[in-house]
Length: 307
Image (cartoon, rainbow, N blue to C red):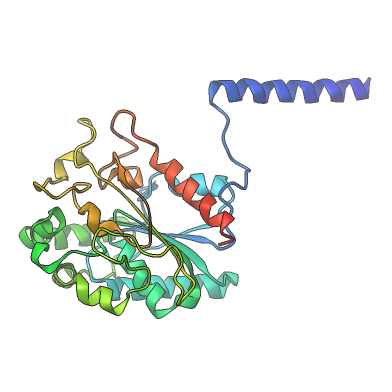
């Protein structure tokens, strides 16, 4: 009877799993799909945060990656400052994590300004970086076009508002001591060429071109992706903040060509700048792919690169 009972239990358990799979209710928790060799560090962009009132900047992304086997760490750097300051803040956190847990390297996945911020770390401490994936990041903006794109217009016309917003976000996320300097941020945005000359690893061969997947100098793997739509969902309040400039394809904030760095995974996702990190609260355009799935798939790609 005990053997029969155990057999029936197994059959019922399998039937339940099949039924759940048929309804799409099964979770991927407990899988190793996203289990990379090195921890994943999520790096927020301009005006970003780690979490506010329990809401992640990368909405639902950390939990999904962890449910699929990844070790995920979330950085907190200045909301509005240049990449040297933000990069040093990120590097300090990485060294602390390495000392506490014995981590040897990290996979950096960054959104928006988090991309060049992470590149600073890859430049000054390449031994700590296994890979760098940037999403919607303003890597390069020709000087003559610095003010003729959504990001340049924002920094030029709303500098004081930007500074106040940064201080408020910093306070809400529980960090009241991170320096905010939108003037330094604007100076970097107007002269990305000098920054790129200092930190060229992964650089495309031409503006709007692609760079190497793996650097022959440092061994770091570089990937990039972006959305290309400013307005995606009428119910999404973030659409109001997205700007369009005639003749400059962008995600509503960063020109598409500016986001290219390393291997370009895709530069035509039907997402705006907020959709790229699954905000606001996952509201997307009709038929748009799930951003959370993008991050999970990228983790799987890194896993099979043994990173």
